[in-house]
Length: 115
Length: 116
Image (cartoon, rainbow over all chains, first blue to last red; front, side, top):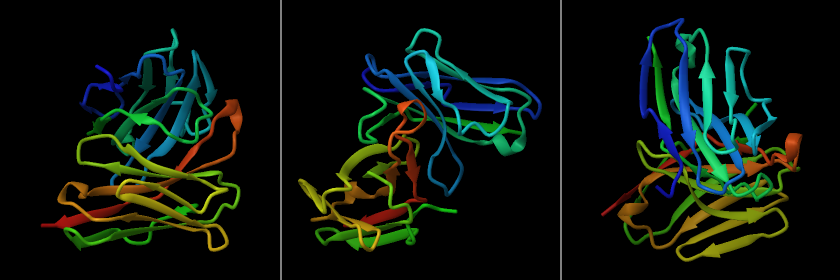
């Protein structure tokens, strides 16, 4: 497809488990972002990739969260030892470059529920 | 501390009338301001933006006004249509920072309902 694709759309897991969330950005976009959105809040920045490298990971809340983008396209957000407070919608966005004036293209998100 | 504030959680207008969504910010270093629109179960969609060196940008039915001295911007939708019913997020970008990232800082959103 032409847009940003995120899978799965919904993920239910138990406290303490490990989860992986996948993002397939728009072809040719070098910049990729992960955000987390809790109910009633705006998206909260987690991490930014320029190509294969994590250029800014200042938004990751703790070391249970990790993300990779090994070939500069698809990215995976990994959460270890999930906690109930991790429940949120995880959004992925891409843009042609990281320096464009904030215009990013978002996927529909993965709704993570930690029971 | 919320750097981008949308103080109205919801707004209801009649079809054909003007919708005005407001946004305030605290950081004078923000260099771009953007409005995103979000439908349920979808990601945010870029709508319109404005550079901090401008005071108005217009795109069809959508106009954004920026008042830097008041640290305030607004989105005007004229005329409003039922399909405009969505949550509207105001966002601002920081100047290029770590890794050349122009980070987006978001407000909490305003839910707009346009009634037929």
